[in-house]
Image (cartoon, rainbow, N blue to C red; front, side, top):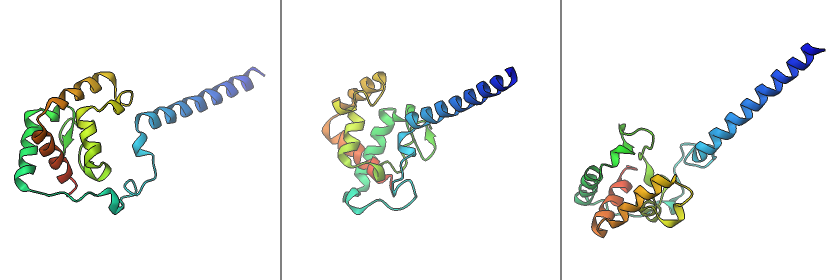
Length: 144
């Protein structure tokens, strides 16, 4: 009788651990579990892609702002920088306005981002408008 109870408890414990690990994975990686066209490797709908002017000078200016602001401390591009938050193909997943909100820590992101990250991102709202625009153009160029 005790062996049966021990087996049941072990089985229930194993199931609980499995459920908790799945819940944790979903909470920590919400975008990776959705079944969108981007996650299946297909091209996103055309309405998600904005027409942008891929001016090489503006792209390079944005790249220099990315370097000058030390964005690679928290993000990576093409494997360079902090691999925890890659920015490769970020413009396929986000519009220019969404990129602006993420860069500057818009109020809508409070509670979505950890508090310390939210405060750090809000510092970028002090960037001059031209610098912020160039950085967004650089981010949009990453889809190519």
